[in-house]
Amino acid sequence: MSEKMAYVVSTHCRRCGTPLRTLRHSLLGLDDLKQRLGSICTACLIPEELAEIEQAQVEALTLAASIRRLQES
Image (cartoon, rainbow, N blue to C red):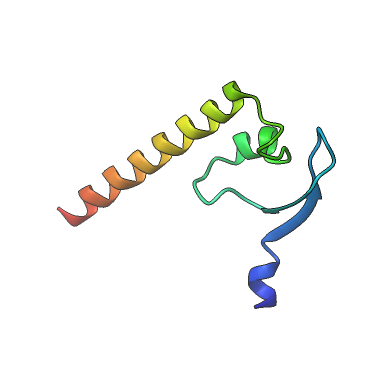
């Protein structure tokens, strides 16, 4: 279990200081976006930032699903 916990990082929101727990790396390969917005709590995200995160997640999951379908063919 301690091996899995090494991937969880405790930090604080850059905007309001709320304690956060986050993963060291993005599970979807969105590390650039995580670097930029990952230390901001959801209460502090502005709608444009939230939309950017959601769009990037949809694109990453769509790509992963396409790759999976190709592998199964």
